[in-house]
Picture 1 (cartoon, rainbow, N blue to C red):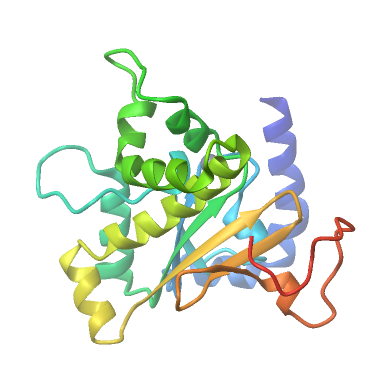
Picture 2: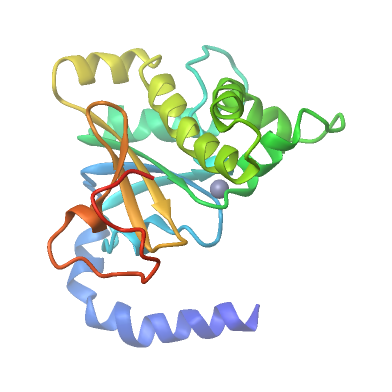
Length: 223
Ligand SMILES: [Zn+2]
């Protein structure tokens, strides 16, 4: 815990002090333009990956960056509540589902449906059962490929589930809201963005002056 308190002291002495005006403005409210649905994984911090300042992106993180389907019930819908607040109260213009490589939730999903009553991870991961089936069918027994395919199918599935929320669908259809699928490839320090055809494309390979990771596999390719 001391590390966190020390970290806070450093934050206060440097970043907070240097950005007093920003933090003062943020006490009056927030107006983020985008919401990110990311994984809770400690290696995948949306604010850091996208280089954003406080107040710029509204974030919800859960196991495997999943969006559940719209369900009108009195259960405890944490992700749906965050989505509702971002879309209906804050009026964000963009919803981004951020998948990532080496996702532990997806790994557990691929292991199978085992689990004990009272467990929460596997019942939660059942949201992505269809993604699992599609990935296993496409991977043809290649476990590494299945993991990556399932991570990316999970993003596609979550984007589909977003459209089951009536107030998301309405705003997407009238142009007030745009949905995006991103995939953070931590092996290559790359970000893949889903194109109009639903394919993930590297922003590093397609940018100008793109840094090379030295893996020799870059070029205009999909992963
Ligand atoms: Zn994850």
